[in-house]
Amino acid sequence: MNFKEELTEYPILSSVLEASEGLGEQVYLIGGFVRDLILKRPSKDIDIVTVGSGIALAERVAALLGPQVQVHIFKNFGTAQIKQGDLELEFVGARRESYQSDSRKPAVEDGSLQDDQNRRDFTINAMGISLNKKDFGELVDPFDGLRDLRKRIIRTPLEPGITFSDDPLRMMRAIRFATQLNFDIEPDTFEAIMAMKDRISIVSMERISDELNKIILAKTPSYGFKLLYHSGLLGIIFPEMIELQGVENIEGKGHKDNFYHTLQVLDNVSETTDDLWLRWAAILHDIAKPATKKFDKKVGWTFHNHEEVGARMVPTIFRRMKLPLNEKMRFVKKLVRLHLRPIVLTKDNITDAAMRRLLVEAGEDIEDLMKLCRADITSKNPLKVKKYVQNFDLVEQKLKDLEERDKLRNFQPVITGAQIMEAFGLKPTREVGEIKEAVREAILEGLIPNELEPAYAYMLKIGAEMGIKPIA
Image (cartoon, rainbow, N blue to C red):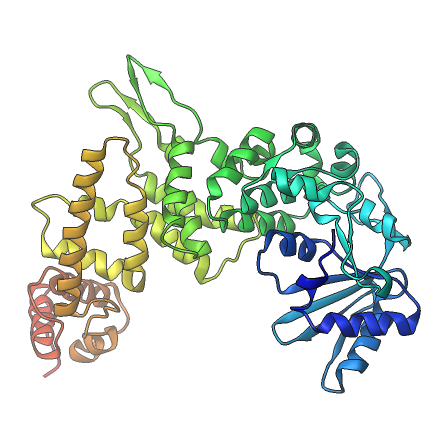
């Protein structure tokens, strides 16, 4: 099969051909770019393998393209990179690899194209396309990767046990590609993942989380989590999520399977946003249900305070999984803590004060919080779902009206601690905090507007009730 016509869309490849002829070396497109070209998926990363020096080839290509083109060289890896427009070309020499059992870092030596294809993770990533003059555009496919693409199968080029033992991260990558492409994992390959799952322990958590995040960002991330669960990998890398699985029954009363509920919430959120951290909030919103689960003979199963316990679990999980501990983590923690609050607001007797408090606590994240709450509706009863959605529509409109009227999105009481100390001649003490909190509560309850004159008068009133006189 020849892809000469498809390659005309990438004129830079003619420079690669010219450079390789000047060096007298064979050169090929390889890996993900070839796969995506066949699948007609957009790809900006072009991997090029040469039977020679990847660095020398990159430097020659850059010289042909002009003095404005820079080559980024990575000597430790024997690779070089050129950026041209929105394309990123990576050059590497063909190589063979051998592994030690306690490391996923291989010993590397120069090799042939066949050696290089043998070391690839999956057949669909082991295909090459010639950039040589004699057979430009010809597919080089020793492992029937084209067949596997057509059958939508993830399969290793060599015996899967060897492939995954050599580099256990490939088990995560198999599930990631299956999720992104909506492919099946070939049975022998999946059985090898199940058998080799414990080898994932030699892989750094940073690399594992990077693959997990790519699964989470897929169109239907639940598919990847189910593969992780059934392979046994999920129990190793994310044990808290495994705890969600299962239904317990006592006296004929059972609760829903919170693992599959969580996956449904994740898919629901994924239909509305590409934001990784909102998707993480969906994953963790019920993470503390196993820890808070209790059986009450009158009401059945309860999970009291699971939102607060779950919020406290977020930093621990992020730290262990080497996820960022910055505002991203705080965003997830906030949404986990608040995810039940909008549901409470759907009741008829909810006051404006309760809505003000939610607006203040959610701040700029109120829209994301409402997306999560809508996604949390997973009932199989369409009438129940319709009722919840209508209630959320009303709540959102009330929140919008209240925000426009009271401007609470970035709420700060107009009275500060410094003003209180100055008014009463106080040093930083407990009384200052109590007066400030009383003013804040009065504003949120709608007793006074968040304006200086009425708030100042209320401050003096609270001080008088506490027996504190203002400075004359």
